[in-house]
Image (cartoon, rainbow, N blue to C red; front, side):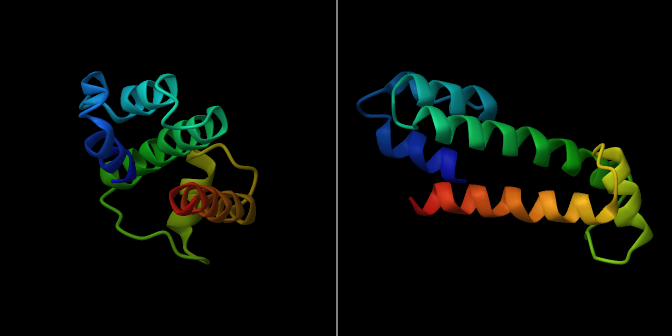
Amino acid sequence: FYIQYLQLHNAKIYPDILLQNTASAIKRLGRRNILTIESKEVLLNAYSYFRKLETFLRVNDINTIAEGSDVTKIAGLFMEHGSTEEFLSYLRATRERVLAEVKS
């Protein structure tokens, strides 16, 4: 919801940033210098990654990614990681990058 917050917070000055599509909104916020180039890239990459993972989870009626689960192994392969450990590490790192952007 960070992107939606930024849209609402800045819409009075830049009404063109009010978009329903999150990826488009991230790009527009970047064009308006509300997000730095680096922040825009981090958030776009994370958004794309999490959307792909969310689709996998929804299609397979899965609610949780847990260490040691067969589902986690399959999810890692679907997300094109070489191992479950690589998948979980990337997932954690991506979450941390997004959290750092939100806190900055």
